[in-house]
Length: 254
Ligand code: SF4
Image (cartoon, rainbow, N blue to C red; front, side, top):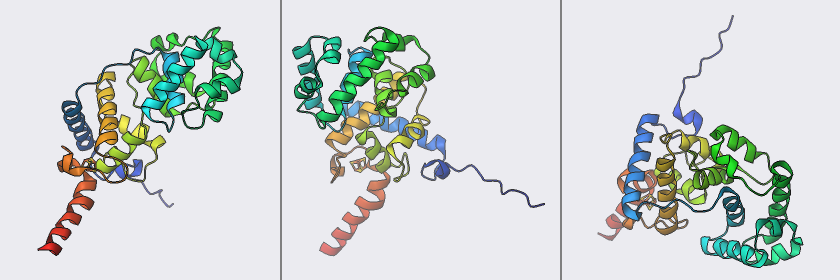
């Protein structure tokens, strides 16, 4: 009888570059350390889980300053999340007009707020802080429009639970560094990157904030400023694309 072929466990099967996972975890640790030294440790948010949920929904594909302005505007105009929930949708949309897709985000916010009120009796998500991580994640994931990044942001930033959010910056920078394969989706990157990090909220927060700030300031979307980066010795993109290109240019000019 033909025996099934036994697949050898290979990091590449899971979207990792072909290095062993211990080496990638060590690389993630050094990246975190250098970026924390470069940008300084980030403070924890003072928002409660409900406020953070609103903030993250507003922030999708929107700059931080616009998100902060829309968040402040909602509270200034309506005074409470209950009033936001019960207001005409057109007024909520008007209050958040400076973020991308207010016509989608206003009804989404209100629908989620109504669902939370039905289940919890109020717009208070503080109970998530005391739930085990797996239960808190599952509770949030049931709502339409709440994906893994939003869940992780609420639970890490406001509840200090050890779960990694992967936004566009974390996704791009970790792909260039070679912590994940270049073709891995942001959704899949949540699990892959989390597996490289300690089970510790502060360490995960430092990794997230370090890559986020680096992606906003140095490792930017179009042309990363590698000449200002302290990670060149660790970076696959630098070593396979940027450095050979600059060597060719120097040779052509000599
Ligand atoms: S060396 Fe360049 S590509 Fe690599 S992380 Fe730094 S800025 Fe990004």
